[in-house]
Image 1 (spheres, protein in one colour):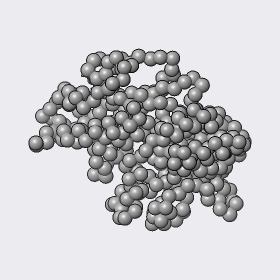
Image 2 (image 1 turned 30 degrees about the vertical axis):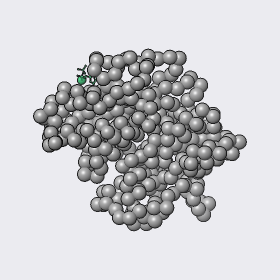
Image 3 (image 1 turned 180 degrees about the vertical axis):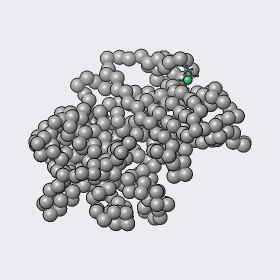
Image 4 (image 1 turned 45 degrees about the horizontal axis):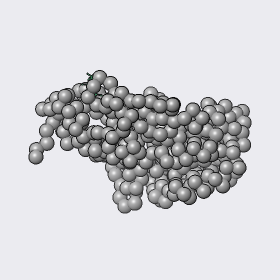
Length: 333
Ligand code: ADP
Ligand code: MG
């Protein structure tokens, strides 16, 4: 079968096809795609709402990825925000800006990626909007639920708490540098894959919140330092981060030398890790370790919460401390 381009199908042709690709057996979803709004029955829960935008040539390049991975990543970055609250993701809407010469197969693969990235967490597509655009624009609004006392916020960290992070840091940012420099060979492709296919920490977030293991939590999307400062600001505290305790993957350690003189720079300031950063009182250490083993997700203590006046300090291997000036990525700067 020959591939069509969107100009031949039109907006409603696209929406009709999207509707055929989706479907839900959720009894609370009274109306999904096909009416003016989606209608969802709510019980005694708190509604969580988050949205994220991905713009071609700002957030991704068509030549670096494929539509399937792009779809998976678009939903993953939103899922990560729900994970950071310890919430349960439920429904999403997606608004798309699409060029008229884009092929239908691009859209098909993109939705397949969306579906694979959302179904495994029990999340359903319930609506969206479609428009012509000179570049691809992807906006997802993800809805989730939680209970009033069962969520974790950026505020809540206390002096004396440990600071923990899940997974490893810097892989995705290093992978992006490699893509910018024209690709990678051998095990370096694992770093690029981290950039293209982030895995949201949904189960971990729910377990941390559900067992009340943490006092505050945030997902690391813009970079460890920037996201740490967000948590510190909301909690009105400071923190000390110990460089030699940062969790670095084997491929990161192997390839970092080709991209930076400093072993830790990209792990500290690079973005798109989509790991969870949280604070917990020291008496929770054993429970956190047990959780890490049972979910098979590394959780590393990288520092501690100190008085607000101390700000954010990085402790180097030799014991010297400094206050970081370059924190990470920020749009418009
Ligand atoms: P309206 O004119 O009310 O905005 P549309 O014709 O744009 O309605 O959309 C019709 C239905 O298709 C709605 O349920 C809407 O949520 C859904 N929809 C539109 N675009 C998309 C999309 N890209 N992905 C999923 N659902 C979509
Ligand atoms: Mg519309």
